Amino acid sequence: MNNSGEHTNIKKILIIGGVAGGATAAARMRRLDETAEITVLEKGPYVSFANCGLPYFISKDIQRRSSLLLQTPEGFFSRYRVDVKVNTEAVEIKRDEKIVVARTSSGDEEISYDKLLLAQGGSPVVPRLPGVTSEHVFKLWTIPDMDRIHAFIEEKKPVHAVIAGGGFIGLEMAEALSARGIAVTVVELAPQVMILMDAEFGAMIKNGLEERGIQVKTHVGLSEIRSNSVLLSDGSILDSGMVLLSVGVRPELKLAKAAGLEIGTSGGLIVDETMRTNDPDIYAAGDMVEITNKVHGRKVRIPLAGPANRQGRIAATNILGSRMVYRGALGTSVVKLFNSTAASTGLSEKAAREAGFDVGVSYLFKDNHVTYYPGGRPLALKLVYDKKTARLLGGQAYGEAGVEKRIDVLATALHGKMTLEDLSELDLAYAPPYNSANDPLNLAAFVGLNNITNFSPLRTPSETLDELRHDGGIILDVRTLGEQSKAPLHNALLIPADEIRDRIDEIPKEKTIYILSKDGFLGHTTLQILKANGWTRVFNIAGGYLAARWVDGWCFHK
Ligand SMILES: Cc1cc2nc3c(=O)[nH]c(=O)nc-3n(C[C@H](O)[C@H](O)[C@H](O)COP(=O)(O)OP(=O)(O)OC[C@H]3O[C@@H](n4cnc5c(N)ncnc54)[C@H](O)[C@@H]3O)c2cc1C
View 1 (spheres, helix red, strand yellow):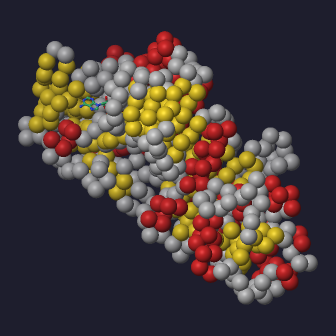
View 2: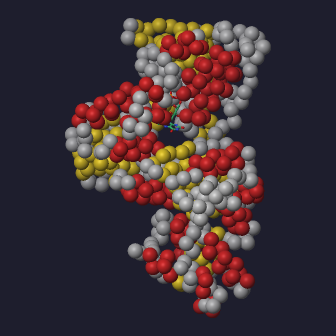
View 3: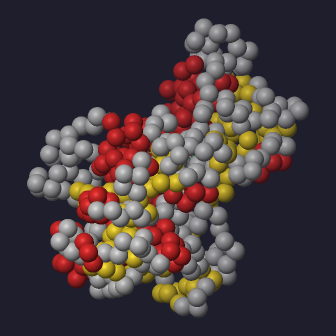
């Protein structure tokens, strides 16, 4: 009988992989059933280590290496009576016999199971390049990887490092290596860093890194790694005493494929909502599985720690006979980049368009709290929604304070399938040191509602450029003279917002007008004045100059 009082015949449970999904599942299983025999096979030397913390040991933010080791095999046994076999690799699953072949340095052993849980994670992609196996080339995935990097820096004291890949691990490591006094260049094949965010956020992040002395090269890859330099695909050569490869993660599927388990269209192992594979006695969790994206309902891979832990918990529960379903994830993520934070949840604008939504976008550029209280820090927020239904689809934020709070609130709203109207009504905490009376999310929802009701129709900076090419419209630049002179835009009609009523006759009525203000706010006010005076084809450029400056095709001269 399990601890929920239900009868199960499960005696032997075997788990392959002993970190996020696997370790969580093992602990949960013991809490659910005091009698089951639970064994974990882990091919590495450590069980349950904090892989997300590895960059912070390199940076020396985390000083004690031991704090990354969350459990030991001995600790697991004494607390949970779970048999953890480290340095033990599962090399074959014999499904017919319900046996796993486990390999150690002293030979192979066959271990039988009633139920098997695969929690093997993924492995970092290593591109085939000349020089890639050199001693000064690293990946960061495990504690031994971290130890190697740390020892190399201590011993060889490299002056320059090249990081291939501008995803979150690459960028966290850019900060970490920079904290160790190393001059870092990030090389990214895609047109932007943080490819899951929209291009303007990639550009803001790149700019923020460059301000911190990190060189960022996009649209370019590594071609060859040499002893003290790298050759890039554009023919240039960079000094580099060490190279970190951080170019993606592949799900670890060799065993599963060989055992005939089904792989899905996204490239992950197929599981049902109980985390069961096509074999009723084999479950899976974590980076290796494909799951449902909660916004568009398609199958995706979301290799992140939160989903892996929750999937492990749910798989454990189902394996032991109770029922718990996993409905999918939003892909909510956050990354610290020096004194800034970038975070996102749900669909980016580009992902929402690819998924076929009628996409609307609001931007908000505000301080994280009222400006009259000292210490406010700038925050850039983008909200993505469906114009037809007003349903929220996703959001992104970047700034120095309050970023993750907005994204977590938005993630909650997405989970609840909320609309712009719901978000506009959210009653969020406010006092001057923390917020404004309307949270930036409330305001972004107001902007979205004004857009979809056509009260204040928006065009994104990219849409504006596209439409201008076809409709012969004009940009009306209503920024203050000071704002215009710092970043002038040629070929625009310049009338500061405060002069619009007096100079309204200068604005052609027969043309489509796209209003550019600093951040969209005075654009909204100007639009109402024009509408009241008979203009019919007039749009506010979403996010104004502060969004457009990061968008390809917009050219503000300095
Ligand atoms: C440097 C770094 C930083 C990260 N930062 C974040 C972060 O800030 N936020 C976030 O959400 N996510 C982060 N992640 C991702 C997160 O760690 C993973 O999504 C999560 O660990 C996946 O859990 P998992 O159980 O699927 O796989 P893992 O935790 O990777 O565990 C899989 C284990 O299975 C073992 N294994 C594989 N095959 C076998 C086999 N045949 N036999 C025995 N053992 C096997 C592996 O050795 C491995 O230890 C980070 C990852 C890294 C590497």
